[in-house]
Length: 434
Image 1 (cartoon, helix red, strand yellow):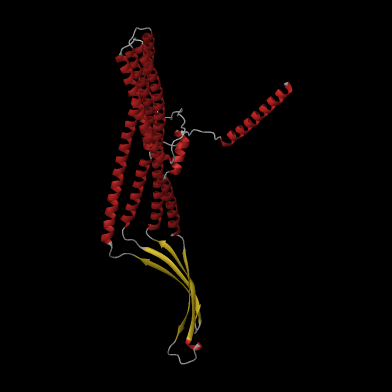
Image 2 (cartoon, rainbow, N blue to C red):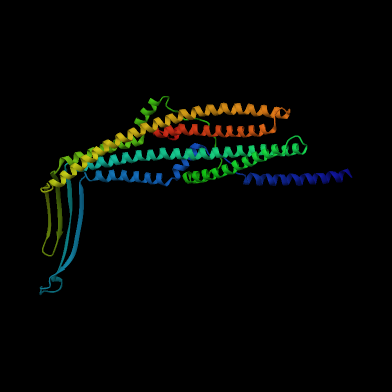
């Protein structure tokens, strides 16, 4: 009897063990570990997928090719040519072969610019400046894109935290509502207390719905910037390194902001064009040489020659004067634009610095407010349980506690965003600051 029971138990355990191995293997095969995206990884993905940024990179590549093509103009230009064909003399009275002329001509033509008034050199410099300008425009685009991604990242992160906070608040208020109904049934509290509990619960549910809508918008904005919907996002634990004083921040902005660098390069570019225009009509000299060889019905032939060609405009003074005035006006505009941009950037840095100080103070105030509200709430709960306080005080305290926690989360987000905003206006927001 015991032997049969042992065999049944052994078969049962064997079956359980086999099933356990099967389900374990299935779980291991289909299980995919979930990793959370860091802020740095999110920014990298946004830059990789952003079409405007990718197009700007392509334009930069084209500008580099323009420099190469312009430099080629200074080199010796060699052109080869080959002509071959037949010609018929309709007045010829001989046989057909004698009336047909098979001709062949080939050769090389060489051209080298000895002097062009500095036009090609100026074109090379202008293209190089265009390339440098585009690099800083891309840097500025990256600077703004990183900030916008950080803003979207923080909005999603904060909205998720506020939703979790709202859920917990609903759970607590729902428990208090159930308790209020029970106490009302026992005659310990009035209908007014039950109504207050119901109103508090309805208010919490309304806030929860509002936060769900806010998160939906944050998710859509995140997806439009990064290229995919937000998944698990890591908390931002490390803070960026900031200038210690406002004066230091302004100095860094003047030295590093891409907009200022672009404006400065445009001054150099307009000055270069002004120098060309001021030269007016200029003499150009080209050295050309030809080597020609071929044959026809009459003979074989070959020749070589070298020539110096010079030219100068004789009736374009009015056009050159107009171009000079236009170039001078553009140079003055570039100088004025540089001053305007620098002033605007200094103003924006001062504003960002002020906002940083305000949000820093607000976080400290909200932390103190939350600590005080927490202590008050705990005290009221204890006094209510002892019958020293009406239940209405607990409901009001619960609302104050939720509001203080909500305000603290928002203040912490605003403070962190203010730090990145300062780096953005300085013009140094990049991977190393994340």
